[in-house]
Length: 309
Length: 188
Image (cartoon, chains in turn green, orange):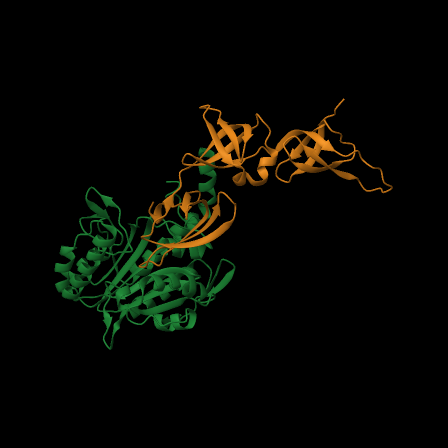
């Protein structure tokens, strides 16, 4: 058994070294632009209530599913540009692209919106690719992906009309929306270019601001590269009343369908009174490392996964 | 059990039929619902199928176990076995055993698959040895190809055997293919 583990870990060495390098490049990328690296609690009394993200509990508290609420509390206190690389925990998420404990890179810009977060992502990914010596193209799972800027984008409505044959509109059936996303939309994006999917139906973006001229649509964008969902950006919702309503509705559903505890994150809601208009984004570091290691499974880029921890 | 607890190798019950989860694929948009795609194999007829489930759904767990049993005798339409640990007897319908019934020889040890307390199926040893109870005397013809003829074994199985095989010979048979392998005892 020990022999098997040593062999497994030795086989990961090249990927783990590259992983460390990618983390260094990412930190430098933000440090050089004057972002402040922060750390926030991994255990909290309340987290953002989301039906499809199930937290682990810890002595009546919750393990972080994302650092988002704390990052926004810092923004509300006057911090401008922030980033954090932290572990997040999501119960039951295990597969080739998932481990229940994973690493998230989140960054925020006060005074900006989701579009800036996407251009940051373009620059970050390209910078990493160049510094690793790949130049402007990376080979992933047998396909060459051209990372040159700007990346192509399409709205959720355009993507579903083209690839799934229907327009989700402002309030689609969530099961159909998610199933088609995973089976009909993402797998058929241009395999040789990153894809930025923008403007999600409002109910699919609980913490995002709605478009001013299109209230059924949220300012949310997601980046996909090589079939991997890499990052999710919002123009942050800063309306406390609206956020409270959305959270309460979500909590009601969680209680009704899943019977799990989901307290309202009161301190965050209070802080929202001072939250400036901001852009925020969460990027899955394990997925980014997978891309640059040509790894088909997350298990190839983390030393210990939930099956061998 | 909740769908999120189902793993590769889990045994589940769908429409009363037990299945083994042969492959499990987990897909989930970050903010969206989890989608579980499974390849399942029916533990009785061996047929495979694919099914998709979503978070919040559940599957019925099948209490599947295997136990060693000794074949005792045939009675009407079923076969009687004895659990070699507890000496309890259990019956399996001839219909359930399909072709496997033709390989059963009294005293033979087989692995039995149970759903709860109900025996579902048996796994035969790869090779069995059984005596020929009936075969014709070979008629020599003028060909150079190996000649085969039909023979009936004590278990009721009919196999093609070489022409030198006589009634009373004991033959080794491959239960996976039903083919003659070799003669192990020659009737004096």
